[in-house]
Length: 209
Image 1 (tube, rainbow, N blue to C red):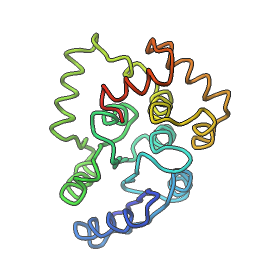
Image 2 (image 1 turned 90 degrees about the vertical axis):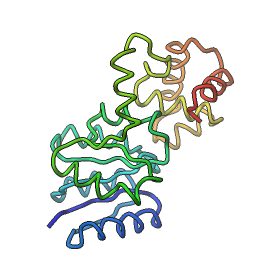
Image 3 (image 1 turned 90 degrees about the horizontal axis):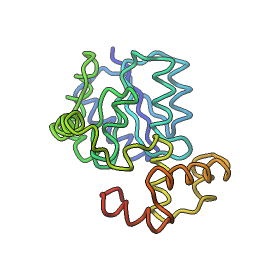
């Protein structure tokens, strides 16, 4: 019996994913959790064959949780589902140890196929991601400024560019204002930008919003 754990903060999404999975795996044991902390607790308490996690959840992000999961359970397949375009996060989650990245728009048609691939120990990547990976290998020395940011810095960049204040970001990410301010300073230095407005313009120009 296949054991699948779904982590997403929207109950409608979780139930939809459950239904799709049961059509492909009628005898599967499927459990649901609403956030990253609950996901980690479930993973530590029970054995799973595959974990399907949203990227953006209240509190810790799916990317943060993924890094912790792979530290303690390196062989556990984790498939990331997200509303964010592949070009924004796919390479980051794959580098962090995910077994695949799938847009929620493709889930009805591709989720069962993706789960089957990661259960076999393979990576699930779309043609778009494969092309991006090839491009990165060919143009590694021509990185965009935002590609030099750490995962946390990239998350803060997107929030700042979306108009969130340092205090709002600190609250949403469960970090101190000082820590977020430090991330902001690093982002400005790495990207050679002087203001939040500069970051917003950059994010729009590079399709990050």
